[in-house]
Image (cartoon, rainbow, N blue to C red; front, side, top):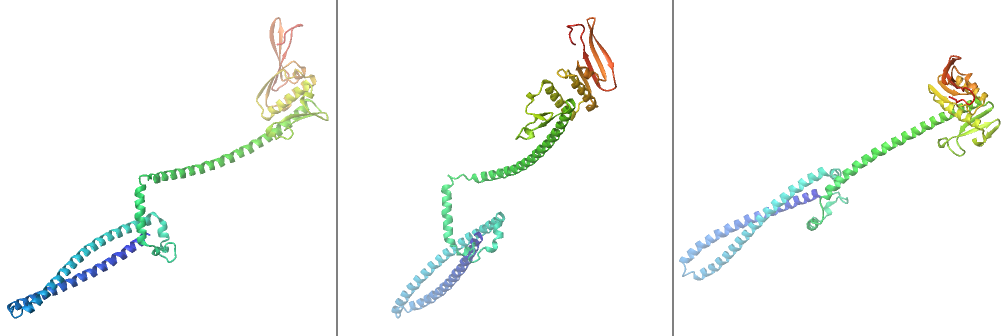
Length: 373
């Protein structure tokens, strides 16, 4: 649009220059005519002087010449007036040319600035003034557009006090912040995706670890229970309709019958179940030493023998310190410590029966009604 305006202004300048040349030519012509008239006046003046000498004979002729002279003087005044007007027009045209030149330079500068600020101008420059195109500016009425520009400038001046022009800068700041927040959001979403993937991997690893632990502990639990109570079996399994991550429950098989609840078992059987589960857990991640206090209190001799044998066979890399009153555990001990009352004093006797790492202490009593230690 600015380029078209500049081209139109160049055309106006060229037209003004042509008009100026015509006016100058007209002024020259008027000057020549004026010179001719002056020469003519001089000739007429000579004739007047000659005629004055012949005043008496040529009075009638002189009167006629006086009329002609007055007429010529009127023409001279009109020509002088026209010359003054031509000079004024010439001055106006000079000012107009100067103003148009300034406007042309401003338009050229604005065009250069617009081309630098808006890349689409250079990209679509070939479309300018193409007939029927969207940039066919030759169909525009430049005079009307100038009037609209002036009208819009006046409206702008009226609205200047009502409009906050700093909003543009504020919008730029907001857009920059929005872009920064979008970048941050993309980073957060990327981190969220990585975290979710990590959580999924951890959940999968946790489930695999839980599955492996459940499988190993359940198998050892059943095997240990079968050793402690031959002919029977126990296992860990999720409740019906639930997943293993939601919990496990103990299932016990006595003979060929699976018990529905642990309440159906005797106290000794429940003790063996608890001991089997604890030992299965300990076997999954063995410790170097275990201290057990009267774990066989509710068991008979056969069961205590099975427990002692289990300690010796399944936990060869660990040391057990067991407090017991049952002979079944004593026979499986590597070292036996006996605590007794003798003459009102507690004494400890050590007996090493075999090499190994199982230590037992026996609590004895002196006399009827004596106190266990």
